[in-house]
Image 1: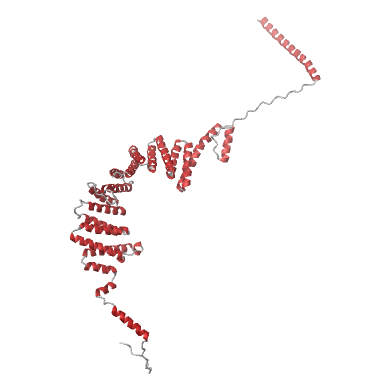
Image 2: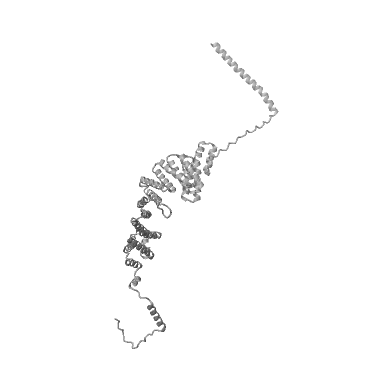
Amino acid sequence: MPTPPRGPPSGRLQPIKVPGKAERDLFFKQEKLRQQQPELSKKQTTRYRNSYKHNLCLDMLQDGYHKSFSELFALIKQQEEERQRQGEESLMWAMVMLKDQHEKLDMLKQHLCKAEEAERKGDFAEVYRSRYELARYFQSGGDKWLADHFFTTCLQTSAQVKGDNGKTQAQGYLNVGLALEEQGDVLSAAEHFEAYYKLSVDHREWIQADNLTFHTDACINLWRIYSSIAASIEEEDSQESLDYLIKALKLATESQDKELQGIASYRLGHAYEQNGDGETALLHLNEYLKICTAESDSEGIGKACDAIAKAYAKQGKVEESITYLKKFVEVAEKSGEEVALSKACHNLGNIFNSLGRYSEATEYFSKSYNLSRSLGDKEAISTNRVQFGIAMAHKMMKGLDSHTVMGTRPALERLIEWKNARVDEFEKPFPEPKKEEPKPREPTPPPPQSQVTEETEQEPQEEEKVDDSKTKSELTDETSSVTETTAS
């Protein structure tokens, strides 16, 4: 109810506002357009008022696809619950939810209804195809949780497909196994791959789109999953890890893939070496070397030679280890693999250094150091620089000790020079000492004539004195002998 006017009346009437021509034309135009529009039904009106998801679910229910509606609604609810569980700080909170992605909702409605209709007819092969298309669609779009859901339902449906001897079921086990492996559940993945293998082993005529048989594909997948399991439990249970690697080698051999067989042999040989069984390790490592040689795989040959050399070194067979390491160096030089060559030279330097063959150790450490510098590998540069310095010091110690023991003047002079310059010249021969030539005697000048005369006059007198002294001594001797005779 309108409120009464306040205050006394003004006593004046306000003029009525008459619309102008422009306003009248606009009004008639709007009225004409309103009459031309069709009247909306209640259903059409609610479609504009409700969300896209709400209308889509209503359509599915009205068309009679109750199972499809229930599955779609459960998927939307599952995503919402996961979003709430992770909290507002999670990345999922900022994602566009499934209920707001119209294209994906249409795809789900189309194929779910198609699968439900085929299920009513008992055509489970069509049910499998519809769900498989959904799984591949979401897999390509990065929606792993939806892809995994439909791969799982494909496997459940595949058991009801008749007339294909289990081929569809084998595909179902493969897809679920791959999904579980991607999630990191390797043990469950192995179970599905084993079921895939059992179904395909008796039907080697089954061929995939890439012309690979189901049996070969099953062997490859089982080889990979067994190798992954072995690596994951290596530290906890080395024996069980070894058992898985033996299974992996068996399946790699069964697949007739030489590359896989070589890798499996290498891993098994390495595992035996870690467990202390060097002889068995060498058998598998030599098999790997044989396969790589047949395939002209230079990288594999170098890897095999390095592993065999380490196995021989652990057994104390140093010469055999050196032989294979030199072969490793040769192969790496021919193939131009600088990283492998640096590693081979480093290993050879270590062996020669431990054997006291310091010249050879210095040579190989020098190569390894220069290669690591050219590659720009900071860690390798640091390691090789230290080892190179140690080898040079060991090599220099031999010469230093020998010069110290020698103790000669040239040796001591060289030691002093080394103290000043730190240059290794201990292997250089000493210079031969210079022979001093005898100096010629200078002729004595002749004495003066008067001096010669005096000397000649003095010489006979000295001779006479000597004769006199001799006669006196002789007389004394004779006198003493006569006295002794008379006394007797």
